[in-house]
Structures are given as structure tokens and as C-alpha cells.
Amino acid sequence: MFTGLIEHLGTVSDIVHDAGGCTLVISDSAPILTDCHVGDSIAVNGACLTVTEFDKEEKGGWFKVWLANETLDRTDLGERKVGDQVNLERAMGAHVRFGGHFVQAHVDTTATIVDKKPDGDSLRILFQLPEPTPERPSLLQYIIPKGYVAIDGTSLTITSVDDANRTFGVMLIQHTQEKITLPIKPIGSKVNIEVDMVGKFVEKSVQAALSGAGGPLRSLVEKVVEDVLVKKGVVQ
Image 1 (cartoon, one colour):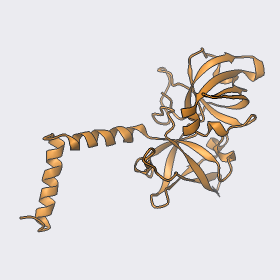
Image 2 (cartoon, helix red, strand yellow):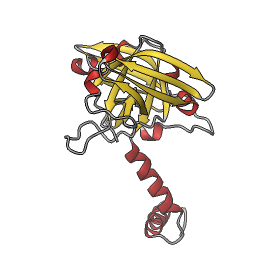
Image 3 (cartoon, helix red, strand yellow):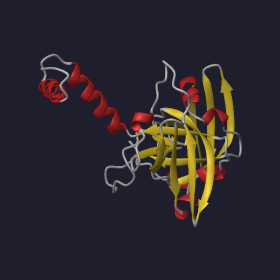
Image 4 (cartoon, helix red, strand yellow):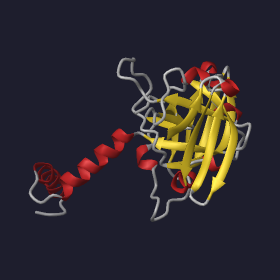
């Protein structure tokens, strides 16, 4: 589990592709390796990855992760190049304050940056989600104004939503701009999106309650609908 509060920016120093995926080496990472062990989870641009090797001293501290083809397909990590910076966050410890929001670092999809505008010292960024498909349905029902979204692993508050155009916006204060990679990504770049998992749980629970025969919630909804139809004169 993660919080969406980025701890450090690392640098991609090596990429090796094979038939099953690819291996990344992330350097300049010493500040988050002080308590690292092989097998630990580190969110890289919002994708939960397992540390397979690391060294706290060499190359400013580095660690190695392996990405399966599923991860490459779901995230922007397959487009990273040597020299690119990435957002890093260690898994949340039980002894720390909980900021941000509940982030699993299981990326749902990517979105595209379609606009960037300064707003005083802040920066407004607009994103567009991809066209939904049967394999990957729309995520717009989880994107609500003032709700949470994790973008490249960063917990951000949604400032605007346009369902018709599949777009949503966020605003970055100056402090946040200095701590993450998002401000330096140009228009047209992809970002990793993880919607709020609480919304997913609520949706599934409601669907299960409504589909179950004779359940109390289903009976209540049916009664409300019946009362409305009677008031409208649709039924007697």
C-alpha cells in the first residue's frame, strides 16, 4: 500500500528488454534505499514493482526491477528512456502518518496530457482518457471533482471533469511541481492513472446488492422507484 506522496526522483540508468518484459535500473536513489531489502515494493511512476537487486552506494544508489509485458502494456514505463527521471515511493510503513490517499500502485490505464496552463505559481494540467473498449471500459465514473486520482503515482485532487470529452484536470502547487516529474512532461505525453479504489469497492458492493434477489437494498430501491412511478401517474 502507498500514499501517493512522492519521496524522491530517481533516474533510469539501464533498460534491457526480453521476450517476457524488461529490466529497469533506477539510479540516484540512495535516499529511499536506506532500509531496502530484496523483495521490497517500490512504486515507480505509480506502478508497484519488486526490487530484485540494489546497491546503496554505487551510481548514487541504484535498484533493479523487472516489468512483465502486462505492466508495460498498462503503464508508460515501456516508453521510458535512459536518463529519464521517475517518481519513487516506498511502500507505506505502519508507523508513519497517512497522507495522500489509499494508493495500491496498480495502474488502471494511461491518459494523455492535452493542455498545460500556468495559474499564478500553480500549474493546471488537463488529461484525456483513452476511448473505452470491451477489454478496458471507461474509468470516468470514478473521476469526480474534488475526488482523488493517482497520476504517475502522485496523489492529486481532481479540479474539473468533462465526461463528453473524457478529460479531467488537476492543479499543482509550486511545492508539488518541484517534487515530481509531471510538470516537465510535454503535451502529448502519457501518464499512469490509478483511480480511487474506494470508488471501485462502493460500485461493486452496490451492484452486488442490487443484483441479489430479495435483498434489503434491492427492496428499498424497488419501493422508491414504484413510489416515483405512482406519483408521475405512470402506474396506478
